[in-house]
Length: 243
Length: 243
Image (cartoon, rainbow over all chains, first blue to last red; front, side, top):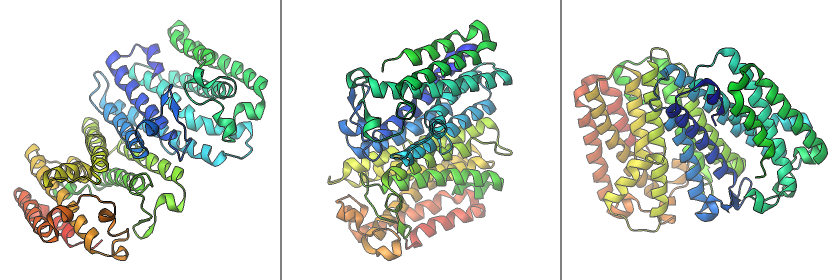
């Protein structure tokens, strides 16, 4: 990520800076999500979480500073990118990360613990909680290169599908994989009484849904032909992953 | 804030957006600083702190989203500001807020609890913890208008002085004022065994230092003549405040 860039031949240093910014937002969100007042998790990527390795205050500040660093990196000079476009990219990342995107989705998630949700409500939550940043990663990649407006529409649809796909697969893995394979604590969602696609639809139906979302994602890329090969691979990778 | 703008006749809507961005960073830092793993405070501006009124998870997310909103606001179109300059403003705010500014200063603060610091070490901490954002507020104001490069140097010196002045006065108020007057818990620093200007220098010496810093601040504004009246008033206000 940002994965849209592969399609539009973007400058690699610009893609690097943009990828780093997205990854910093992602990393901050993980450090904060693992805190005791949120998911209270002790394991991340097979290692102790930040607040376990250090302490809560440090993890809070680390997350804060990682978020700031994302906007620091993306506000530096990017070769070949018009400053006005770069401002749009910053705004896209901020909108995707904030109260109307990732942080808002996280708040909906908190409010949903112990409640019975419909599939529609669960989708609304995930479109914000994880989907918004995935969508931003795809669109920011396209912003790094020369994408036409209708390309953004197709990429937006692709991103929306892989965002949900990621979550459905995540729920299946959380229910079925082991902690050793995941590198984070398995079965956390059920233990925390969180609504998931598996708890609402059952495992079989959730797997059928992931197949449908994957196909929709591939279909959305049709206008790009072979140039979207990496994005097709990304959709397949999300389904094939075991961690 | 951003208070440099008064000197350079900046567009008021641009000043508004920039002020809002600085205030959002400030507000996020207060919400997170009040959390139990940090200062564990129950009162802010005479009201229950965010995590007391709601809960810790909400306060964490509120702080996260407020920070994001700062960069969201400052990456929107600002009339009359060249996009390249606006990127510089964003970068200035991000640098002042992050690990080499406010968040880094907060980490130094945490590490200093219970330790004996020299005045020099205390100053280093406060230049980052509170000074960096105050400096950013002053310089961002100037960026909104038409300031010459040497103006930035004078304003930087002014900002550095009022940043420290703010902290020295804060330490005096924490030691001498009541909780009712402050709108936040008084005597917290001594209770938490935190090094302050009062604990290191004594109250009399701290007051002498505040007088010297105030004079230095006024001196730094000399090149601007009467156009810097509001900034002179700001330096005086910091000393006269009782909350």
